[in-house]
Amino acid sequence: MQLPAALALVGGSMEMMGSGGEWASKHFSAASNTARIAKTWGGMMRLYGGFLGGAAGIVGAVFDGYSAIDAFSRPRDASGIAYAARMMVIGTATVMGATVAFAGSAPSEADDGAHQYRVPQAGYRNGRETG
Image: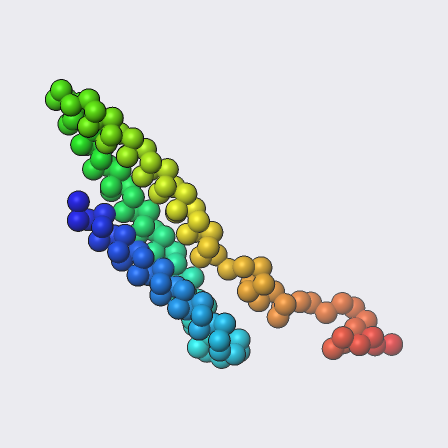
């Protein structure tokens, strides 16, 4: 059972690095390399952290499933029910956590840089009407 714990620990560490990247991108000038790199790596760290957290949940649910099958094969129905319930709870939490992690790692609409690539309208130059 150390594998799910190790995956969750590394995933949590990557989430903290993603939060650090978010902090750095907010406290440095948006045009600086530091802010751009922090924003890019912060999102990737959150995505990787969410993936590892999801993998930890899947591995834990599989181990609990095997334990439930083993408990039901012996006359230990209460333990089997407990393991099966834990497997379902971990599976549901894994799906929800992975969804939140993947959605949280995506760039927001304000950060997509679309304002830099707007095509000027005909008859306007630098925001002024040309005659």
